[in-house]
Length: 87
Image 1 (cartoon, rainbow, N blue to C red):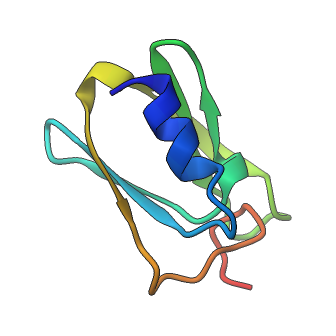
Image 2 (image 1 turned 180 degrees about the vertical axis):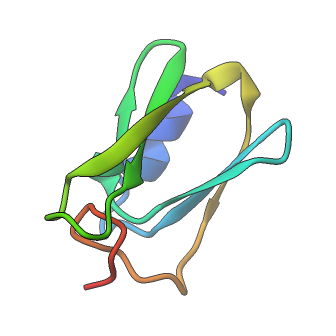
């Protein structure tokens, strides 16, 4: 997948949570656009720390854009303040 394809989804207003599905079947649910850092060939995806303030993550996973198979909008999922907790 191209970086521009990811940006198009992440920058959509209003933001709609996204499910990122990889070629190996693993999935990441993005509830906030600040949950990722996009690079030329990869995405750093923050794993929410539910016991900490919004925008603080327990860890990050680095995913190659070559392995992003689908980005699926999730309109029925609540967006968050960036930490994975609804609200």
